[in-house]
Amino acid sequence: MTRAATATIDLQALQYNLQRVRESAANARVISVIKANGYGHGMLRVAEALSSSDAFAVAKIEEAVTLREAGITQPILLLEGFADATELALLAQHAIDAVIHHQAQITLLEQTPLASPLKVWLKIDTGMHRLGVNVDDALTSYRRLQACASQACANVADEIVVMSHFANADDRSDPSTAAQLKQFNLATAEIDAAHSLANSAAILAHKESHAAWVRPGIMLYGVSPFIDAVAADDRLKAVMTLSSKLIAINHYKKGDALGYGGSWCCPEDMSVGVVAIGYGDGYPRAARAGTPVLINGQRVPLVGRVSMDMLCVDLRQLPAAAIGDRAVLWGAGLPVEEIAQCANTIPYELLCRVTQRVQFTEIE
Ligand SMILES: *Cc1c(COP(=O)(O)O)cnc(C)c1O
Image 1 (cartoon, rainbow, N blue to C red):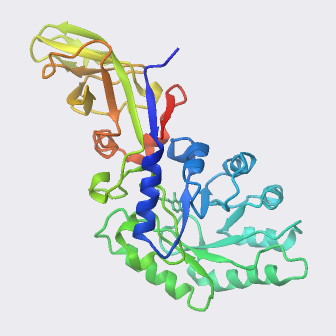
Image 2: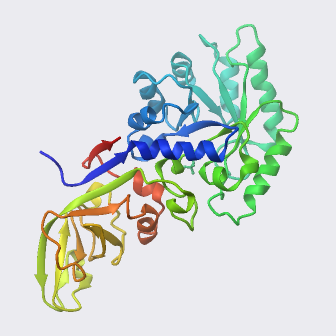
C-alpha cells in the first residue's frame, strides 16, 4: 500500500548544498547540523548522505547516541551538552563531544572522573541570551577547562574550541551580528583556541565570522536562511518535496461555503479540488486562503481551512485537472520559504513538523 502524502528527499541536492557551504567557507571545517531529525528529513539518511562532513551537531543526547549506534564515526557535538553525571558518562562512553555553556557543567567535569577525556566546545553568550557563559566569565571558564585537561587523570581533551551563536544573522542589515562578533573577539583575545560562530546565514553573508569551524543547518536542506530570500537566490537546491494527490474534484454553486467553519465561500459556480494532505501530515493549518499549491506543475490557490487529512484548492484556472493528479505542497518548483510566509512561520518549523504518517522516499 502506498500512501498519497509523500516527502521525497533528494540526496544529491543535500550533497550539492554541502558543496555550496565548502565554496562559501573554503578554509573552514564543516560541522553539519542535523538536529530535530535532520530538520525533518531523517537524521540517519542525512548523516549518511553528508558523510564528507568534518563533524555533525545535534541538540539532544538521544540523537547523538542514535548516530553512534548506527555506526556514524565522525565527531558528534552535543549542542546542549550534558545535564548530569550520568549523561556525562554516557558521552564519554560514546565519544560524543559536548558544548559547555554553564558553570554547573564545568563543576561537574571537575568532580567526575571519566574513562576517557571528553572533547569540549566552550560556548560564550555574545548577545543571543539563550545558552553560553557570560563574556566576562569566558577566560576563567576556559582556564578551568584547561585545568581539567592538564590533570594527570585528564577528563577534558586538549583541543578546546570556543564558540558563540548569532541571534539576527538572518537579517543581513542587522548590525547586531557585527557587534556579537566584536564581543566574541574581545572575550577570546587571550584564549588560544579554534573559533566557531557561523550558522547558515553567517556562512553566506558574514565571511569575517567563518573562522575554524562553520555550523550550517538550514542551507544544507536547500532553504534560504534569510528572511527576504528563497533558496535559488543563494544557489541552493530544495531537498524535501512534499507532495500528495487530488482525490476528488467537486462542482459548487456561487455562495457555497467550503469546509470547517465555512470561512471561504465560492464567488461563482466553480470546481474545487481536494488534496489528500492536512495538518495531521504536517501541512500548516495556519496556511491562509491563497497559499499556492502546484497541481501538475501549475500554481493554484488554497481555499477554505486546512483540515486534518485534506485541503481544498481552487481549480478555476485548471479545467484539465483530474483525480489522481500530483499536488506539490512545497519543494522543487514551490519554495517552502513562500509557504512559510503564507502560514506566518519559518521554513525550519514546516520542515521539522512533517509527521511520520507521511511516506518518506529518497532519490539519489
Ligand atoms: C541550529 C544551530 C545551527 C544551525 O543554524 P542554521 O540557521 O540552521 O544554519 C548552528 N549553531 C547552533 C548552535 C545551532 O543551534
